[in-house]
Amino acid sequence: MKPKLTWQIPLMASALLLASGCSDAKPLAGSASSIQPSQSASLSESPSAKPASAKPSASTGASASPEPTASGKPTAQPTAKPTAKPTAKPSAKPTAKPTAKPTAKPPEKPTAKPSASAKPDAVTTIAKPSELAVWVNKSRKLPADYVPSDLTEPKVRFSFSEKLEKRKMRKTAAAALEELFAAADKDGVKLYAVSGYRSYKTQTSLFNAYVKRDGEAAASRYSARPGMSEHQTGLAMDVSCKEVNYLLEESFGETAEGKWLAKHAPDYGFIIRYPKGTEKITGYQYEPWHIRYLGKELARKVAGQGVTLDEYFGQSVPVNAP
Image 1 (cartoon, rainbow, N blue to C red):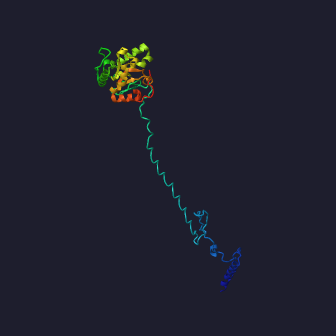
Image 2: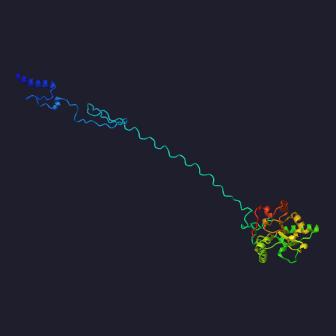
Image 3: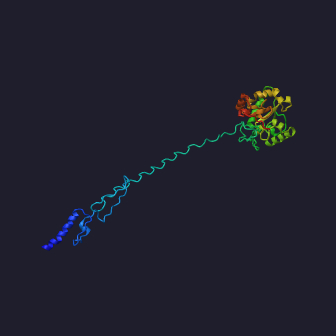
């Protein structure tokens, strides 16, 4: 039994030293020094357990190191990722384009034709030369090839006996001239027809002869250029009397025949085309002998207003081109 006691005493002594807190105590010689550290005391951490590093918290952004559990692993990983990406993109593209294109174009430029007050050098060729109310002057000319289709010779007194084109008029105008002469005869007034229709060619020759004799400026006051003469319409007639030797002179207007004609011509559809004092409007000097057929209704309207045919049709600027 003795040998048993001898190895127990050193073991007890070592236990007492450990219990007294001596950190530097060494095992006694011959003691049981083969005991490993892991068998004498437990460590605070398992060597195989490394602390898990925590990711930043989604809510605070701070770093935290969770305490290790008994197993050596962290109790929890960060619980939340960022909750959401931005939830909305721009909500919509512009929802509407301009609702409508302009509904109307700029108003159109004025469509009216040039008025009768056009400058003298703005000459218009008449589109309907056969109309009874055709309006001819220095700014409105007849086509060069226009020849009335119904020319005839009125049964009236003439100042010449030759069978010339100037004896003719359009049929309606010729009939009206016969009535006029017959009415004058009843009143004791003897009228003579001097010059009616003239072709474009005849008017060209006549105007050129006057220009050669008197010069262009003077000739243009009493003679029309080709195409601008009412005689080409077949609706005009120059009238005279014996008292002035059947000539076409201003003095005819002072004769009994001239006065009667001026007064009664509208009753038969004629007007004095170039009245006294109207040269700045008509472009021609006074011609008491030149009568123009318009028909009774229009002739009475023009004469009743005391205006020229140019003024009646809206001429507001003198037609005074040479």
